[in-house]
Amino acid sequence: MPNLLVVDDEQSICWGLSKMGESLGYQVTTASSAEAALALAAEARPDAIVLDVRLPGLDGLSAMEQLRAEVGDVPMIVITAYGDLQTAVNAVRNGAFDYITKPFSLEQVRHAVLRAVQRPDQGDFGPRRDVPVEGIVGRTPVMQATFNRIALAASADSCVLLSGESGTGKELAARAIHRYSRRADGPFVAVNVAALSPSLAESELFGHERGAFTGAERSRSGLLAQADGGTLFLDEVADIPLSLQVKLLRALDSGEVLPVGGSKPITTNIRVISATHQNLLKKIADGTFRHDLYFRLSAFEIELPPLRERRDDIPDLVRHFVARIRGEAAGDEPEVSRDALAELQRRPWFGNVRELRNVIEHAMIVARGGAILPEHLSPPIAAELVPGLNREAASPGQIGELISAWAKDALQESSPAGQAYNKLLQLVEPPLLKAAMERCGGNCAAAARELGMHRITLSKKLDQYGLR
Image (tube, rainbow, N blue to C red; front, side):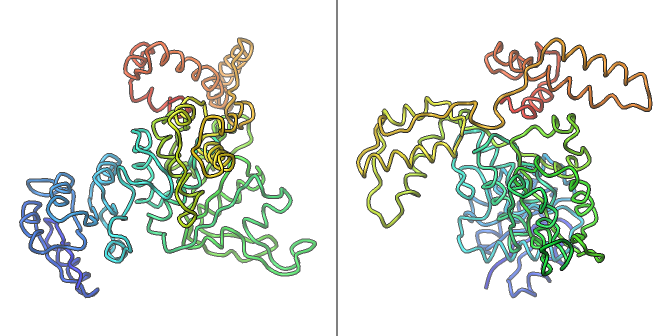
């Protein structure tokens, strides 16, 4: 019989969660403080712990490490009435299996407890430090921060926008968010928007009724309806036709999908994760992407770092790809020479992790089972061959025109100046911030002082422009 330990100083919550656990056939132990929970944990040996953050004496987040030292890697479901971002981040960093804010329904906790107790692998209960996420490999601080962001996104149900250069693993991140979310039992429907035919994109996304257009011989369910109860992943979302953006926004806001040629909407419950290597703020300024849809899709943003910013992860990635390409049943893995690894760590990797995998696959073919040497590596690809790398340079003429447009619009209440102002910032700020960071040797605090802005503001802008 599984054991559940409930730690909360509110008697009503302990009583309710006890009844819920008993209805599942679990043995439930309750404690009103972290100190009491630590005393009970060794004896009760819980299979899962439901832990409140705000407790008298030792708080829940501080108690997590001590509880783990006492009973091992038991999944802990953190509950709190203070659902701020910092508390969520700390909970995830401490290895929380799930993060639930009060007021909550017993069904929420019940689902989390079931997933925690019935997980197939006792060591696999959510992305935390030093744990690879769905094939995403990395030990560097920037990747550990990415793991934490993924875990935090998984604990909520908001739309997530994944940004980063091509080949950084945005779809892997989307799949990880889905896997560790409350929607894990639902479908994960992935669609590359750029690959949709412009004439059939609406039908693909929203479905159509029989006879809605020439060739529509039968009704068809769209991708939004197919993702009901799960996650819809919109890759290259910047390429969605402008004519469909309003309809997508309405579907997300209302939870209803209207097929092409239909008169009766279909109710759906989906979570959207979108990804792009393009600058959506620039697309908004250009008038090719709606700002309201951007705000709807980007409730939570995660920037996937380029490989050149985490070169210390390359040896682990190489071993990962060699093992995957070779396969478990195909014999011993080939050795990768020290010189080959050094060469791999020197390269700029404009194609990122995807390029690295292709280089390793090429080298294994050429090496024919022997050690991989530098001469077996295919040449690196040029930056201009990779989309999303070349940034638009700001000329004095462009800057002057935008300043004039901004000043003119700012004097007219009926004409918003924000579009010109945002475009001006996107032209001027990136080279200025980059120069300041280079001048200060990559020290964010020193660069912020020179620029006259707060360090946190500079950090957010560096993330926004992909200048980390």
